[in-house]
Image 1: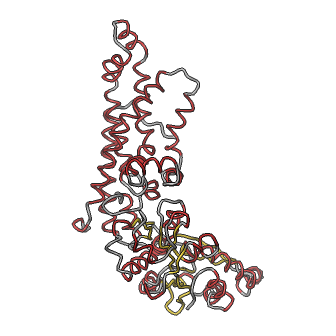
Image 2 (image 1 turned 60 degrees about the horizontal axis):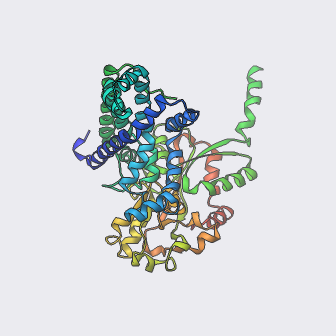
Image 3 (image 1 turned 30 degrees about the vertical axis):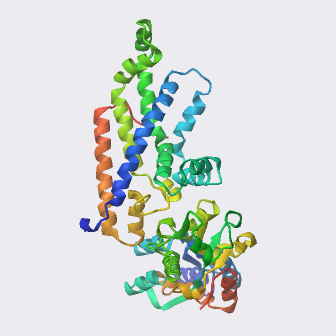
Length: 227
Length: 247
């Protein structure tokens, strides 16, 4: 295998994409998971279903609708264009938005399970000692769930690394901007450059496997409930 | 006696009976191939099964022993390679269609008529082309930009579809204002045709799409007949009407 001839740019872009996606999903996914774990609202199954949808939908379905939603003719795409001067599709920011939707369940599900595990007792105890709800969340729920935060982050990160269908649809395959690892592998296979495809694919395989072993060794409770 | 019955039972499919021909076809040509397959079936009784995909993917499947009889590629390189590797029959190879590129825009988005001047003005955000490392239409598109001396100026406006179909989708969904797509994708739609400029053939090497008989079907008369059918006047007319040129 000719590892030396492999262009490392897609690896770098993919790592950046996964890091941004994971960081932003911590901010978006944590409140959703907290709400899901504690609410008695009848809207809960709806929200749960929405957050689990990316697990069951083919990425091409997500990619297709994102292509339409993010187009400059749609409200979201138009808003983004007027705010930033750049289109949402074919841009790194667009990939981050798409990946956040794509990886949402991998953040929300482990966190919601952990928050449910904390239960009402410790939170109520904190409240009776004068803690505000936010204080109780930050000082009690978060420390008790710290392992699941790690699991959720690692799963989100590694799931984003492997993203293919969505970026194929909305990314535009621009070298140095939106050509991620999985697309580069696909290009190599289609152009019969199997050595390069092997180098990148084997790297991703080994990395993903190692991550999952670590996650499961570390926290046996927080499995993602796929399907 | 048993032998005789077996012979009688086996006889019909061997002489003049209907056979099934599995044709792997480049996605861009699949809609035309459907019509051709129907006409061929109607006149010969042979059944055609079409498997559409990108030329690269179909090639990889053929090399791995996919059960195809005929390969209608979007280029001449993969058929040549199959012949060189002994996986296709050298004397059963023919260019069945020559693709033409059009510059497609969305009339309501653009300040001027779609044409080379519009490319030069740069008053657009994205120009979609097929990925030149994967798709013959992408190679041709890059040659067009070079011929118009716009390849450097427009380098950062380019977005790449995985194949010519996805490239078309990038334009049709409004994400790219302009795209270099296949004439075949535009010809049936008057609204699109009016916002398209047929790129002169001199701007790029011809996009020759070659068909080839695969080794496993070397003795299959119906498969060879289908390849021959593509060169008949009737088939050539249908291919031309679909937006291709014929050799």
